[in-house]
Length: 81
Image (cartoon, rainbow, N blue to C red; front, side, top):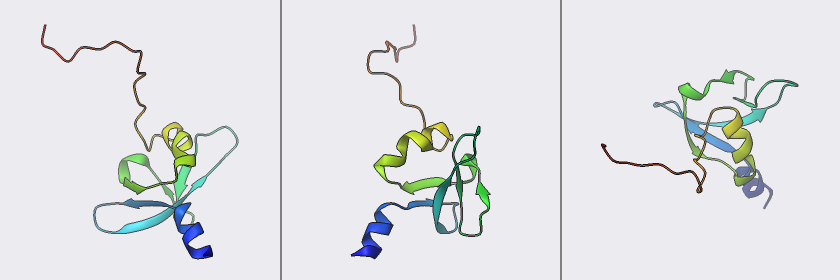
């Protein structure tokens, strides 16, 4: 079904009061940005992502919408030495 295919590619986010459907917007030398249906850019600190396509994860990380995961080979300690 076409509607389901479109929904699986959408990014859904909440600003604390409403859930909105967003899409990635690309400029030449800028990181990807999420915009709403009106074309308004949404900053990473203004929303919490609820659903996004796996294919968009790298772009969402570059735009600051998802945290950068530490490398599995990176050593770290969670102790109070």
